[in-house]
Every structure is written in C-alpha cells, then in structure tokens.
Length: 291
Image 1 (cartoon, rainbow, N blue to C red):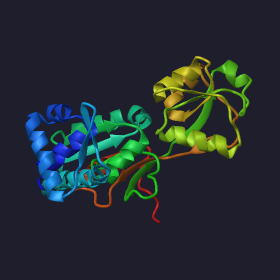
Image 2: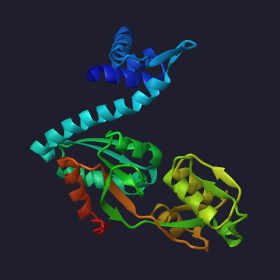
Image 3: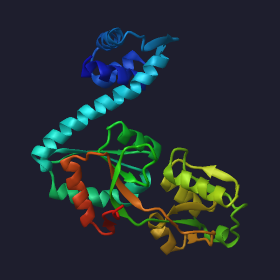
Image 4: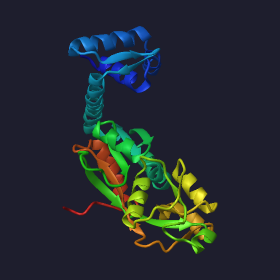
C-alpha cells in the first residue's frame, strides 16, 4: 500500500472515472487502473464497480475512502509540520474560510501576513462550512476561519473575533416586516449562515417564504433589491446600511452573537501558530477565554 495508490483511489472516488482521475494526477489511465487493482488486492475486497461507462465505489470502497483521505491528509500535515518546525517562516499553511469570512476578513489578513512572511507556502480554500469542517477532520486543512466547529470534529479554537448577525431588508420591505410572512433570502444548504437562519426561524416558530441564492453577495444584493429579508453579518452590509439601500429590521432576538473563530486541529503546526500570532495582532481578534 503506497501513497500513490491512495491518491489514485481518492482521485477516482472524487471524479468518477479513470480518465478524469488520470488527468487530475497527470498520469496515464493504465497507471490509475493498476493502482486501484493493486490496492484492492492488498485489502482483499473490491473497491470499485462498473456503472454504465463509468465506475463507482462499492460499499467497501466508500468506507475505505474516508480513511484514505485521513491518511493522505495526515501525511501532508506531517510533512508541513516537520518543515515548519525547522523554520516556521518557510513552512506551509493550508487555510480554509467560509465565504463570508473570505469576503470580510481574509484579504487584509493575508496581505499583512504575506508582507511579513513572504516565504510561507499558502493554500487557501473557500467553501461552505460543512465542506471545510470535513477538511479539518480529514487533516486536509490546517486552520479554518468560520463559525463554531461542530461536535465530533477534533479541534481547538485559537482566536476569536466579534461578529453580529442582523436581519436586514430594503427600506420598503423593512417598513412592513413581519417575521412569519415577509419572504427571506437564504444561502445555499451547507452554509453556516443558512443553518443559523433556519434555527432562528424555527426557534420563533416562523415559516416565511424563502428564496435560495448561491452566495453571500447574492443574498445581500437580493435583499437590497427588495426580494426579502436576510440574516447577515453586520460587517458584510456596512456599505449598504450607510447608503440606505438596506436597513436593520426589529426582528425579535436580534442581533445574534456569532463570533468568527480561527480553528485548528488538535496539533497545530508551527506555521499555523505563526499565522495565529499574526491574527491576534489584527484589530478585533483575541485569544479565546480559558475554559
């Protein structure tokens, strides 16, 4: 069992075809097929099965894929930890951020960090909360900028920053706002903000009509255009509030306190700690309270 075989297997699992896996890995299709065959032989169970012209994972393959991702993540994390421990300023950092954090807080942080530590190898992924917490659990990310980590994900919060969520709407919509009947503009499933909005509406036994849009920017634009109310970070709509395109409604129980958090795995690398030190020097960030 080798790293290259595991990478071929995961590429096949994620792309659904030998050809696509080979293209991703820059190897031949026969090399991918040979790796999958050898891996299945080592394990003693079939990992893939033919489905039409493509392939899919067997039940055994689906189970094994989760472990394979963690093994590959640990190998990469181990390499980064060793290099970073020798010289954190020349290590690597795999940073992940939810879209709202990427829009509001990440650009300035990265620019400042890059100016101070130009030789750190940075990789940044932006995606929905569910995807990023899976990355952290699989050791595919060193630090996640987002909300609260879900139960069951081994992690430690290393820095926090205040973040208020408010319900906003265009002035005409806000003037007639009613929690149970005013339409809501929502993020896509898997978004942490979407989950918070759904929990808020459920807590208040409200079931308003909903329009799902695909990004935080689209939600803000949709609310400003009068499509409905939206639960968003106050920081994300500062310009719209100042210009009068949006106003904060008197929705009960708001604003909601949902701080940004920088969350690492149980054993953060030296380069991760270097970034967190930079983070704690930035305006508004502080170390989490003990306990």
